[in-house]
Length: 434
Image (cartoon, rainbow, N blue to C red; front, side):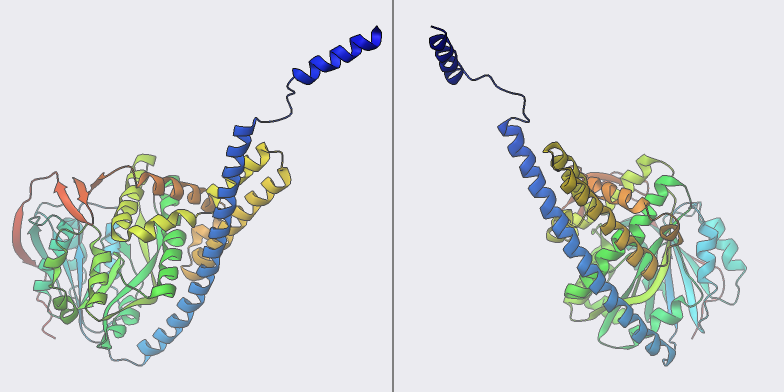
């Protein structure tokens, strides 16, 4: 009788098994394994990218040494430096003054402002007056084109006395050897443009520092890899040097009037016209003054959106070059599955990847002292960069200068400010006749 009862009990257990809490259910487990697979793919792709960065670094250093030899043995032609200004930016005086302290025989510095009451002009006039031996001029342009900076360059190019035009943003600071090292590359008639990488110069604290580190490492790494794989097919805003003939070959600045990423476009169009675009080994400072998270985010999003529309395929692929998001995803997914050894390994690989890139690019290439002092910030910056990349596919509007823009492809479709007109020229001193 007892045996029959035990047999009946076992039969009931066989037909009605009692579930045991042994781990995630099958669907959750499947999702975790999919996330782990994605993390492994991202870890591999970011490692491949680091390998390309190393190769790009080697090419950049080799090219830089050759360029210095060319510059040392070349004559130095007269040049015109074109510099739009807008508002009383951080370190504006120091930025402008650095262009008047060049160890270069003959050059002029031309400034453009949208309106005669622009807050930057008092500083510009003060600096110009303290360097009377350097010819300079101020042009009041207005903003009749969708991209006001491009119109400023157009007006300045029309005013420029010399054939070689060095275009530069107002938030850039340079060393005395700047012109001496970049201009001789334009003496080769096959070269239509020269551009420079830059390091971020943080002047406003933590959030500004994240942007600055992104400039020094993330941006520069991408440029070096592009230069390695296909050569330079674009320009970089902080400095792009052109000749009037290469500029005329693309239809002048009028062909760029509604491009938001005009710096990318000018190099791209010059390359399409049959000229070479050269990446200089010279590194300049790009001043960063973003005091809040909102300012930092808006700035980063604008850059990401311009890249998205300028190089859509490349921008999409950028999602696979970040390391920290995949390392963190792998840590969480593998840990939830109970594979803590693999979880720790994936996170460690991601951190090592980013620290290696920070050291190689941020210190060995651009010599950014912030990277040397706080390399641990770059893994955090990598997470931020991934978040911005995702957001670039969601937001189609952003603020730049005093305007709100909407984009249609690579072009400015709508600018929410009323355009003004200009055209006045203010001579700070007699222009150079050389």
